[in-house]
Amino acid sequence: MSKPDFSFEYELATKGALNIAGVDEAGRGPLAGSVLAAAVMFDFKKIENSDLLVGINDSKKLSEKKREMLFEIIIANSYVSIASATPAIIERLNIRGASLFAMRQAVLGLAKKPQHVLIDGNAIPNDMPMPASAIIKGDAKSLSIAAASIVAKVLRDKMCPIMDMDYQGYEFAKHKAYGTKIHLEALNRLGVSEHHRVSFAPVKKLLA
Image (tube, rainbow, N blue to C red; front, side, top):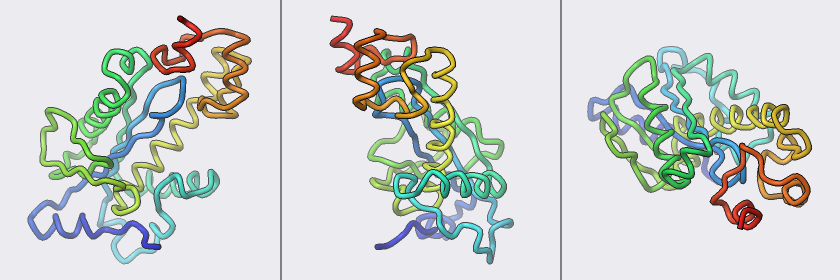
């Protein structure tokens, strides 16, 4: 099975775009917490002729330990920016709109402005201030997007223990706020917390 590489980035470089950012999000499916987006733009001077990036792949295909290790490598060798959309923003824009909002904010937060942006998925956020391409399953095709998927996943997972501190009993750190049996039982027992997404079906049902 093929792994992500710099094919998209190199093709854009031949057209004059040398600073290219990959963008992905984490946390669309959970019942609680923010959706988080990351933008990653590699410093090619640091990674040229290097095997530092070996192992980078779609975050869903990596173990937690592997993601944590690659996260440190990515942070040390790239420009990184993160942004989130809170449950309140998710309710206002819906999860798709909130994800695109967070993606745009992550790009705008990069310390160095990209000349082109590669976005995982089939949509480009409105008002993106530079050229952008949407790549379906981009985290399995572009190293820049795959790196962004790792950063977003690692940091989103780190938010869950913090939610646990706010509202004990839901065990967010264990199930990462997905609709597992443990989570659904806690919801029925404890009710809806401020972290929950009230329009998501299992939560909405309790509020009906």
